[in-house]
Image 1: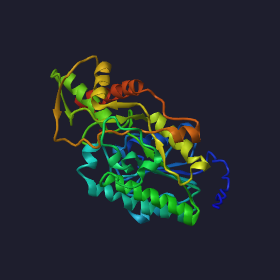
Image 2: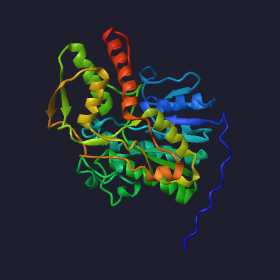
Image 3: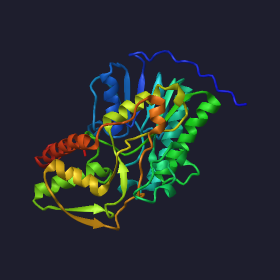
Image 4: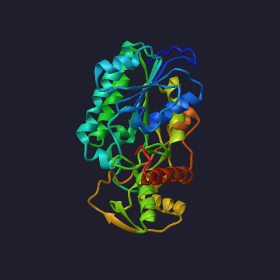
Amino acid sequence: METKRFIEKDPQLQKDDLIVITGAGGFIAGNLARYFKNKGFTRIRAVDKKPLYEWYLKVPGVESLCLDVSREENCKRVCEGAVEVYQLAADMGGMGFIERFRVECLRSILINTHMIEAAYRAGVRNYFYSSSACAYNVLLQQDPKVRALKESDAYPAMAERGYGWEKLISEMFCQEYWAERGMKTHIARFHNVYGPNGTWDGGREKAPAALCRKVIEAIDKKDLNITIWGDGTPTRSFMYIDDCVKGIDMIMHCDELIATPINLGSSELVSINELLSKVEKIAGVKLKRHYDPDAPRGVAGRNSDNTFIKKMLKWEPKTPLDEGLAVTYKWIQEQYHNRKKGKRVVE
């Protein structure tokens, strides 16, 4: 008979305990740094390899370091004195990036192996890893009317090439550091996070931001045409950034979820065509649609089964897509016009 492993209860996280967040120059991790700062934590170390002027969010009062955590010596520096580590650093982007740059995505394994070892050696109490729904078996995602993916659907393994496999193997590292070395790790599989203060141009942006920008451009240029990658039928769920950072906090501090991958995503499924219709409604415009069948499109359908997260946390991401899109559209619109005026913006 298998016996349940004893889990020592951690003392409550103090406001002056050191929290480390990697990838903090990016969208999710930058918002996470702001989230913890707003909760009153006074020692937050934010880390990203990008120059500080390229960070989406630079949170006042947060120690901001420009370091490449794919290098072992930098990981040791980053983890010094940390009580909690949130590992969100990765080379990634939307489908246009992860389909074209698989080697870069795979090389993120260096970040994860060096970071988790450095965290272990530094005596970190809790370690969070940001995985992805790209870790799921692609054979279960061949129909736009796909059933929602539950956590067990990652195996038998057939992850998305490059990015998905890197996520899956990094999850294993987290599970084995707990099983073999006793370090508490936490794993969330993100499903398409969107919102303001993120990538909206340049090739790494995801569908909500890309469609918002394209609609804004069409209106600005008085050319009411839009090109959609694929045929517009693939389906996805999209989680608003505020739900994402709250979910990360809750997952990290749930002892029942140690070394246990869990979905973190909305269960509101829409097609890309429907997503565009929502953006058009916000903008008050109707565009003529053109489809590019040769563009990257990813799997046919992907949705988050939230049965497990509702059971464990009595919560799930619930910001309606219409509501989150409206805020995102307004922010991208401001960024677009500021750039047009010659002001510096982060894209």
